Length: 399
Image 1 (tube, rainbow, N blue to C red):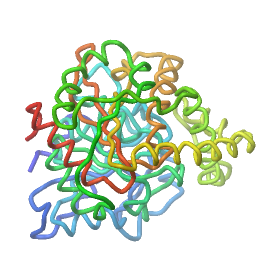
Image 2: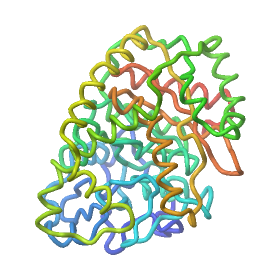
Image 3: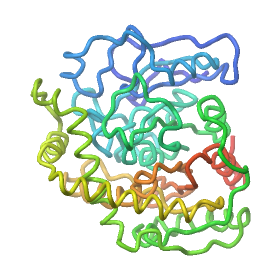
Image 4: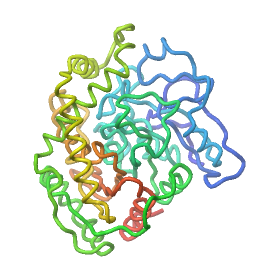
């Protein structure tokens, strides 16, 4: 088991570790894992990345079912990892508990909000780590830190015992350095697929490739060629002729309304201190025009039907997980927000539709990792993980 006691990445929440031994045997026996500090572990506080949340909420009375499933499968919990405050951010910054190191690019952000989980895996502190994904919070840190990550189909895995942000988008997810470990965790947590195991044809989402920086596109050229040897020649498709900016705007409005409905009462009652950008996002959520949120929900229904028809036969969408590598630690708030908007237009493709997405660490741009995402129809998560493993093996990235 990796040396999780030596937290070289600053990935774990400071203080007493929430360590729990797994069952003596099981499909995950011998593996160590960590969980993002929005999942409950009995007897331990769930800080949700904010000291005022920790102060105003008691230690957990029970362990979240998803965590318990991993323990019963033989994996041992090594501790809880840092998160962006209330999971409302993509850089991974946390001014209260410390921003985790990005082991693959120490001068850059690790990505968020599942920053600590991605950093713990990238640093070799654990074999896999549980995170959550609302607007990209597993996929973006996976890309930034150079690890494998999955956002499963929405609703495939219970989020009982986990703090919410946008309930109609929230999903657990996890990271691993080895695609085989990523798939082993999926065999424990995911339901059986709802269709045949074979996937194809391969589709390239035109808007996402145009949105990506040239260096990112070049970095992912070879993986795409290898993917074509597995699934056949890729077909270019327009998934969002309205533009990724439209996807981002509709996602932003619906998420904001849900974030305020979920956490607004606590924010109003507690008046918590927030780090840079977080308070501003909650202020915007509070002021969200209900008409804009309603328009976002209407758009989501139509967009979901469009993608469902496109992917119904087993087709796989491929595109850069993030258009650019991780922002540097000295990037201004304006620069960070520009990357956030550009990235979330892409992550909204799967997010708006509740689709499974796997990010594979298959490229490097500006000397730092960039991920390639594979997306397919909802309920085909296991087949998608198998395809990710095949692609990684073909590129010498397995094991």
